[in-house]
Length: 149
Image (cartoon, rainbow, N blue to C red):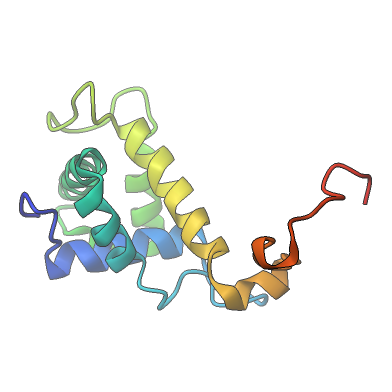
């Protein structure tokens, strides 16, 4: 990743795969498959460089753990191996010396999970499926938001 937070092809593919692991396709819908999660994060990170730094360190940590555990790139692992790498981020002893006080493995995982949920919930085709009525601005808000439903 360059200092303008442009992602390499491998970083894009890794981020998209991580997002799909967090919200996978199921009988309900396609999850974050083919949503372009990495492109959304790349754009956001250009305007929030501290998040670009966190994602840069996090992606390096993912690759490092993949190599240490399995001797392969993250993209070359099977689902169980990828899950082990992802779970290692929240262990007490994460692998690698790339982590800093400002970019911890827990912070990366927390933000990755939150970003995946945010991107998923902003897809208009998902709104009906999850019962979201859309933007309230055009409807004058939801004056009954605090009333029992």
